[in-house]
Length: 313
Image 1 (cartoon, rainbow, N blue to C red):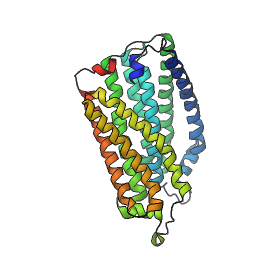
Image 2 (image 1 turned 45 degrees about the vertical axis):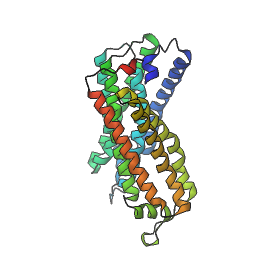
Image 3 (image 1 turned 90 degrees about the vertical axis):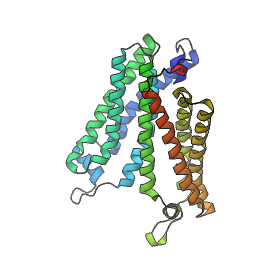
Image 4 (image 1 turned 120 degrees about the vertical axis):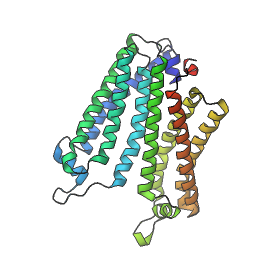
């Protein structure tokens, strides 16, 4: 965010071309979203019902574990994308009220789209998934187009209120991300060392197989960069929230450290056995606590009337 609000993008050629390429990929992401939705859900009531309830003659709702996994991944991907777009939108020349409205609507429609999986409890409600998708895609496209025309036409320095809205939005989305972490962890393993052990090392009594190295590494690998990016956003924003420099550094380092330990402990479990389940559980809770503290600090700062001087450096 700091690079967007403190630099004249057109005069900073490397940043300018980086933003141009990002916007190109943002448009490609929008197109890909339609393809992804079609291949996963389809655009008909029948195909949506088949995804959520499988056999129409003997409907059985998709598992909570699958829904929580989709929610977990979706919150991360869309939150990072939207916060970047909102940061760029904040320096365009469009009226503040228009930008504020789009930030609110796009964030709300995104959450509606992701949360709709939890409220589709009967086949008659599957249309909510399609409706929320259409609303979100329309709002997302408007944001991208306004950023494209705004960046190429004329930039302006964002006002303090709009920057606070962007930070507020990120803090709220971050809280939803924490909820998704808790739900995803619970539906897969529960919150006990024994549940973690059974998930990774298997349990003959529950007919659970031991996880393979390939299977665990498929999760470990993308989480390395995903959590690094998410940790970086928190560490980047904390100094601007009025937190003391030393405390900002400490909290940022803890988020990086706990996220890495949480990820690494999954691999360690395969070779070092049951005791590592305690490390997995401890690192997970410490990570969620660190993210919660950081999110609340950002939320509190975004609601304060005090100025945000560091954002203009």
